[in-house]
Length: 457
Ligand code: SF4
Image (tube, rainbow, N blue to C red; front, side, top):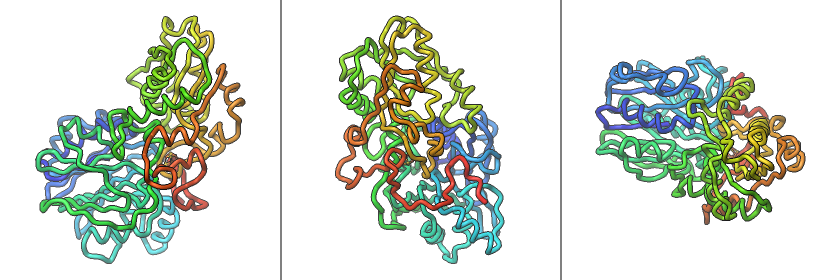
């Protein structure tokens, strides 16, 4: 998500911001802009560049804008954010990342009271709650709506007059504010600021609500902060290496994960290689600590999206074949230590191991810079169901055999926490680790929809 207030070309800035955040979702993109009187939006399937061109950006005039790249969930253009609603009392646009775990219940209640829904998203539930609130000021309407929802959300709301930002009480998804000239901006990751020449100001705190309008910036709370629980997978896999989350640089965190992994793994090899892109930093850290040369053993085809977040198994399978190639001269005749960030279903690891062996590697030792993933995520990251998570039903040795590796090592939970290095935030160092430990930082409802099956009843 990206948002900006007080810039003469807000839509173009949002376009560049979204471009930097493209790794967070490739299924669709949208921008809504306001000129103070009207609001207009454009959205579509695919990458930011597929959806927007000069002409479309020129048509989005105004000094306030929000944008979104779509990660997962039900297809259909109506589900692409930002969602934009018009009414006699004014327009409202919303962008939201995360997952509202009580959305089904709330939607049911709203429908009983006469609401009609146009999309399958939990974001629309939020829009209804905001619009129906009896309060007059938008900030109070948003606060009232947020008091009813549970789960993970980083939220940006845009009207003709202001931009409102909120972060859930556990701070599960990253969100920060920055400044470019006199304009304030907000982004899921700090890497968005570099491209537009903005200066990072600070992260949005759990339970905080920030209002930005022509009078400036105003900070409030809508909830006491719960226990901090930033998503650990943001550090391990999801975010870009040049972003910082809660003061910790992602590349540095990943390098430390690799260093720690090298200390915990008991493997010998001739070269260390990382699975591009998210595991390169960990592989460098591993190689440094193990004293084994780091080499580019795998090359990524830049023009294929991440297999992990394609919506169907069939597309995932096709994606892996197109995505990676081994560098034969690097791995031929070598014992290769292959560092990857995680094993979800095991299919990708199996293919990569086979690919490296077919390219002449004599041994392939797989080292994973996170613990076995045994539980689904209910907070907006598609890490699959219990049944699909290979580590929820197989031992490490069984997984090793399935993926065809000569050895398999996962990083320990303690090692992961130490490597990321968020200290002094109580239990779990302020991290959510539910997909590794099963300890969810919020209550989970029996019918809590997983992010990619968010077609609500
Ligand atoms: S369950 Fe895992 S992926 Fe989901 S928010 Fe927690 S750490 Fe992140």
